[in-house]
Image 1 (cartoon, rainbow, N blue to C red):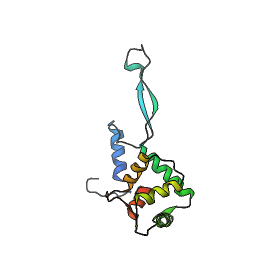
Image 2 (image 1 turned 30 degrees about the vertical axis):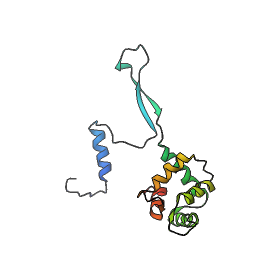
Image 3 (image 1 turned 30 degrees about the horizontal axis):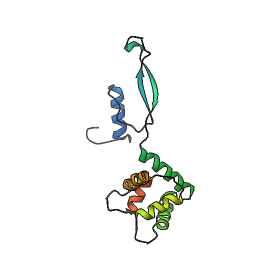
Image 4 (image 1 turned 120 degrees about the vertical axis):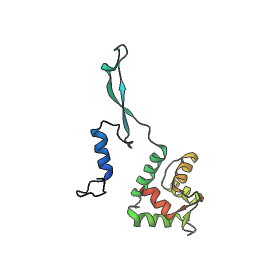
Length: 147
C-alpha cells in the first residue's frame, strides 16, 4: 500500500515476500539451515539434467554457541525477563550492574559449556555491543533473547 495503510494487517515484509515470489525474483536472504544447489550427473550434457539437492549450510558459530547458552539457561530455570534478570544478578558477583569477562566466563563454566577461549571471546563480543569491555543488563537481555 503506497499510503502506508494496512487494512487487513498484512505486514510489509510479508507483502515483499509475495511480490518476490510472484515476480520470480530471488527471495530475500533467509536464516534457513539448508540450501538447494543445482547438480547434474557427469556426462549428462547440460542444464536439462539439473536437479536440486539439499546441502547443509554452515551454521554461524556465534549462533551455535548462543543456542547452547540459551538451552542451558532454560534448563537452569532462566526463562523470560524475570528469570534472566535473576540469572544476571547471580552472575554479577560485584553488583556493578555489568558483567566483566571474568564473571561471564565463570557463568559459562558453571553452565558446563565447554567453549574454547576463541568461542568465549566471540560470544562475549556479541553481547558487548558498545565495546565497553563489560556486558550491561540490556546487552545481556538482547544477546540472550535476540531482541
